[in-house]
Length: 102
Image 1: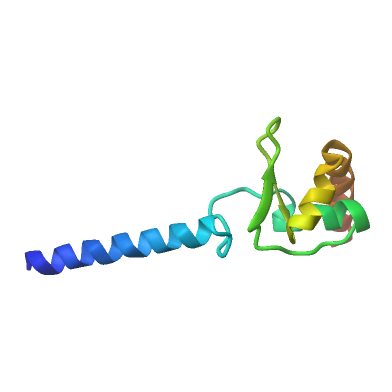
Image 2: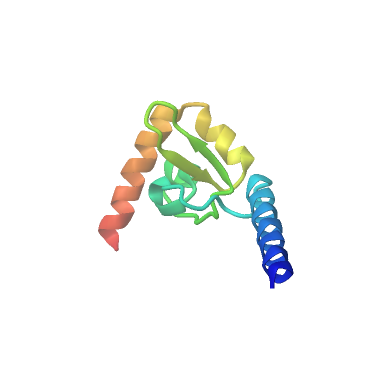
């Protein structure tokens, strides 16, 4: 009985470590992070005013507000961060307009 319990604990530990590695590598989205715009790419909102859903594996947390913004890839994140305050404002406006339509 004791051996079975120890094997189960080792199996659970391996599973937890595997999930942690996948999350850190960006292959799985971070769980429990409250994303702005419901996980929509912030650059797609700011630049084109459209919703492009992401798994939030590429993200940025604003150090001033603690809010997390998701992106479809590293390039869109870099573009967004060239003028973060302006892009946050534009993305907020676009997201609000899209929500009014729905």
